[in-house]
Image 1 (spheres, one colour):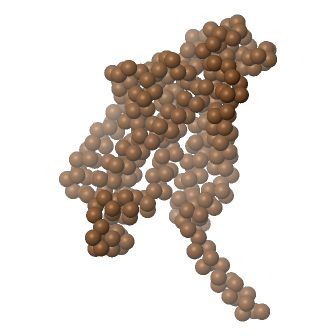
Image 2 (cartoon, helix red, strand yellow):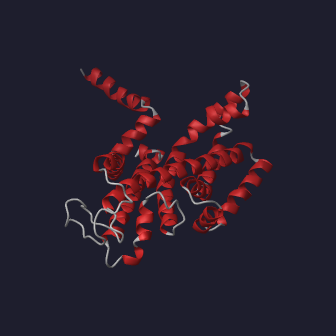
Length: 298
């Protein structure tokens, strides 16, 4: 009996070590209550934005009632109307789709640029690293919002232009992180073994190094999503977006002159932005803990 207990005890550490890094990261993530709260909140927001406009069925630009109708006073317009008489709830539902889509697309562009530049700099080093590092530093010293405004102004304001502008100004942090990871991993044993077996540069970067550099890059990508949502809201607030597409920033910007008479048309979209960015930030903090080896050991 005693030998059976000793064998069981000796098997427990081995079973824990046998867990894959991704399963262990998920276990640590699930132990973070704030991260689970953020994940649930973001999931609820996404579901509401996906199915809410279809169920509610009110176009966001239609005049549905008298201007400045207060919230919760008419059953047909639950959250009231703005200064033109447009349904605030309809604008939030449709605008949420646009804001989330632009945030995700811009984060994808930023991460793609950042990983590409950082991977090339960290893998090849030397003159390539010097040139690309100077490029990263050049974009870092540029005022991000002002540079994005200039890019949007140079072209016809549209969602594609906004996505491109946000992606161009938000990639430098990911590039520096990718550079550091590739520089650290390129001379490890598994990379040298693959190089000795005849693997080319592209295979080494994509098949050997990139999968091992993904955890910190995933954390960086989650944080960029929140920044991209705020960037989109700021550009829409300033009128530097597609005027034919409703978004949360456009709702706040359009009603800012009437904030005293129509506070709800500014408060509710602002609260939606706050909750969305908060949920993404909580998820990012949870991912940071999950992929942190010191916290996993603890």
